[in-house]
Image 1 (tube, rainbow, N blue to C red):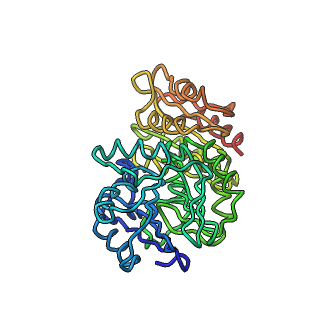
Image 2: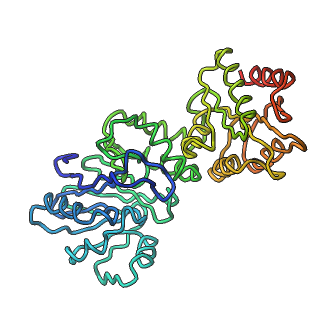
Image 3: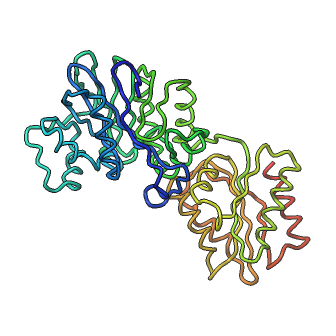
Length: 384
């Protein structure tokens, strides 16, 4: 696939994978992207997952047309992008491998017997590399989302090779909304590193970019302000959509009843968006995505072993590990005796920044009663 006259896509689609990084459900598979710039000197950008050695090398050979690559630019050492470095070098042993100091430290960890000798080029942030007509500038992006990550800007065609940034779940031939799976990808994998992404966006703002080439998901060549704007909102922990997300766990259905009643009352009062998730049954990564998408969150769970129900505990830990902040949170607890769920949930956010707690808390003893319906009505009114 031609991206520009000189830049080619040589990546692969993985339709067999069920869990990305061993935890994220990917019903539409995954794309592992790789690129080539054909110039006086030829640069290959990253390899692909180890299960796709043969098709990737075939794609590369077709683009090369008998020529040999001069550089392999390693932007990210995660194995879904670096697994074929050794296989590539077996076929093209005279290629110079380009990376930063941290890249090569990680490379030796993954490939113990790899000796590059003088075929290694260590670059620094902002350093340039000429291919002839194309001039590349290396843009370091530490902790977006590994410490060695760097990105590359081609000033000739105004293309930004963005490593894992601006990526999404799904193969390239999947017809789906970009934002939905990009949001789930971002908050699941990169969400903790908002400050580092903000630093990257400031660097990118100084570049004249027409095309973004990520390591996952489609090449972005239209309406770039939309994608950059979403990344700015996500990494700044801002509110993307006005609405309320209600996340609950329920043992015998009583806590679920309270959550559904709150959702009903919010809709009646004209809440712009109400999303509800049963944390025991729905994809946890999608629930994390929704918690960051909306400005208000209600957590409803039972007291369980003097703690809270495991799925809720997992969910809150997923949020706090990703620096959940700048949100309003309401609490619904249930307990047949010694209910402590609200207290436990609130304590789990003690290190989170800029959390506003609703004054109205719903406390249920076993089943929803008239007094709880009144509490839920008050909570709905406060949320509105």
